[in-house]
Length: 120
Image (cartoon, rainbow, N blue to C red; front, side, top):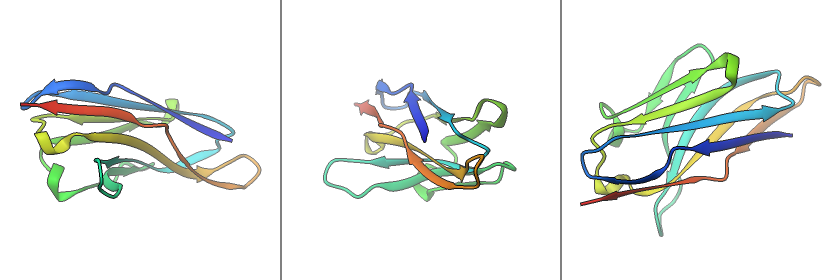
């Protein structure tokens, strides 16, 4: 089993910054892709940003230029630096990891989510 634990959410004023972290643990051989998703009330979960093991990144158009995703492969940890936060960034943010275990099994795991609330 692979577990992901997020941290770093909270309440921030519009224009402010937050940094989310997500650490993966368990039977992990390699994590190919790590990403951040978010889900606002009454909306579907959407991809915010993703990063491959080699460092290639992908961002939702709504966060380009404001958010930066990074990872530490040695620590199986992914980060999301969020700057110039807007009211519409308010959501529960979920970490996701996709990879393989030592026995050749594949996994796709989710964290429990962390709340980000942006106030005016």
